[in-house]
Length: 244
Image (cartoon, rainbow, N blue to C red; front, side, top):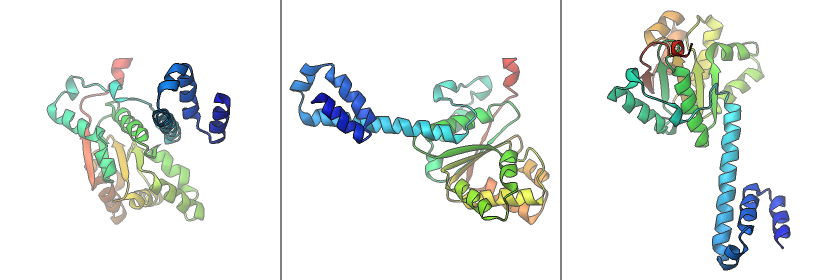
């Protein structure tokens, strides 16, 4: 009978429930004296947990996040020990801004932990079943530049717009020509006010304007990248120097 039950669960692809059932079978006395409803509830909960874990793993795999980290990997050193900074980080880690479709700009010098913090937010979002994708801004623009104007281009923009969280690292690190700015605008505009975009940059909005120039297109980019958002400034100097 037990093998028949396992075979039936296999046909339904209930891998989590199968593992739980095998564990319960190690204690036949428990099964004999436990009501069927409790056993069934236990098996169903095991299956839900298994599917949640499998989905989280799949989301992490497709996220392109450079680091897979948890809250325990984050630390507040002397430079990060102000109440204001702690409060902002705590607020971001609730992911409420993602639920509201708001944006986040993570600013700071090279090596101050911007990418680490973005990865932490991304991992947390994946653990909550959110679709996340991480890109170096310049690499993303170049990857879709050749298809601009074609059906493939608009399909790629639509795919990006559908992600719960889009992360653009090294934003405005390089100058962008008019076509590249148009692509950046299309990406940001498709998501603005709907889904969360997290930008990592060594420059403030003033620096963005210097990099992009003062044109109508650049102003539209800055407006979409700088509005409806929270800003977290990473304090201190490069932490990489401490690792050498």
